[in-house]
Image 1: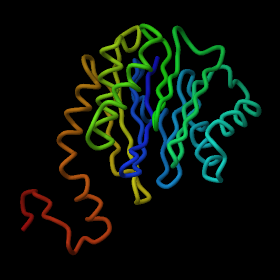
Image 2 (image 1 turned 180 degrees about the vertical axis):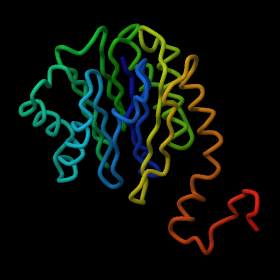
Image 3 (image 1 turned 45 degrees about the vertical axis):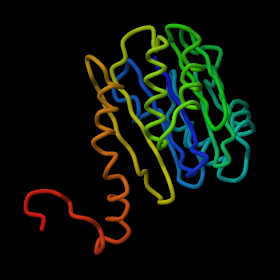
Image 4 (image 1 turned 135 degrees about the vertical axis):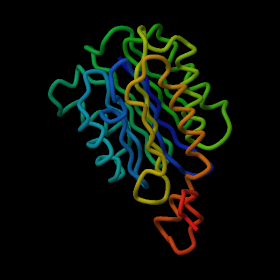
Length: 224
């Protein structure tokens, strides 16, 4: 029911994830990130807590591969789960349990991992990774281009209805956390449009939190 990407920008060190699904509000359940630690996704028959466990493990210098192996060895119903994790060094790991739904696959590349289930075809994750590796720009832009490539490669077997993106950087909160929780037509396209509105203000919102006395105008009625 889901296809996703976790990735790192080797230039800035930013970490992020993006996801889309036929289910509503997919990003709220499936993608997690911690600044200075890593990013993870838990999908298929989703247990949102598993992504948090993976982040807790890699926080203490456990490799992504070892973190997933530890989780697989000690978690009930793990055969229903599909997992991705990436650390600050860009190391990645993926897991798909034997009861993952429909056509499923995962693909890893340099600083990126993609996975999906109930896919139209098994080539979708590879197309996403390749699009990410060949893209330019900031991490959020590249994540969304990869999602568009996944959709163009076939995406999910049925229509997708929700999408989301999450990016962390040097501060302890996400600098990008955008979602389309339900759309009858094109949630990935709608999410990209929201991102283009938000993109020019990303750094401004960080500055407003750190030093509001020197932050730029809010640009709203009544703001001097």
